[in-house]
Length: 276
Image (cartoon, rainbow, N blue to C red):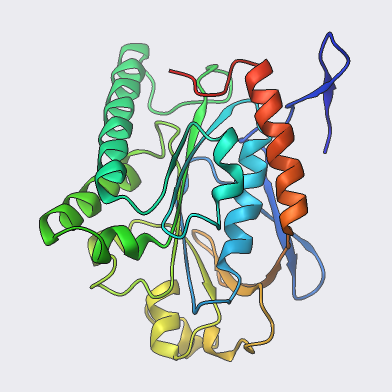
């Protein structure tokens, strides 16, 4: 990581969310990067397949970016919880809080589009000085199908659908993970809005197709072929391409703690932490 120095001689944030995010390596050993801005990503696969590794790679990069703010929703608390002190918002298994948060993000999104219209522009750029808001959601099924009642679950899904549909150009990308994004967990109208997909180990070819999109398994891209012991391997599909078999880089708890501690300090010193 490249760093700059503050006047006090301490390293500060210097990455940009507009920089490609390092995810790992492909099956030929070549590095794999992801351009997240103006995109949304959905990850699916069985428990223990490595989805949290992908979320941590993206969250760690965003935490170290001077032009990004973190919004984290974690149904289990522990997958993203180590970043809670450097996030602007951290929501655990509380559906009411999650809905309120999405309403606020919707208002921010609307305000940004009003500003873009006044500027005669169509999307946020790196030179605008407007921070990209990276929304990371783990265990999306907890909010969309488990907690609360049906009306609350539908409101959460509707608000998230709006954010995924309209948030990209406003600088609000969404990264979400769930075990099986079937229609009863994530409405098809929401799932189909995610342009990027990552399919980790799946138990069936049907589940792999639900994650990547119908027909990919029949063309030889089935996450059911990933061996259970190969955690972190997935098929990554980006817009306009073919699924690539990749191995996601792994951050252990100590790695994450060090990254989060540095990001927390640097964000406070740069007045990025808990910004209004």
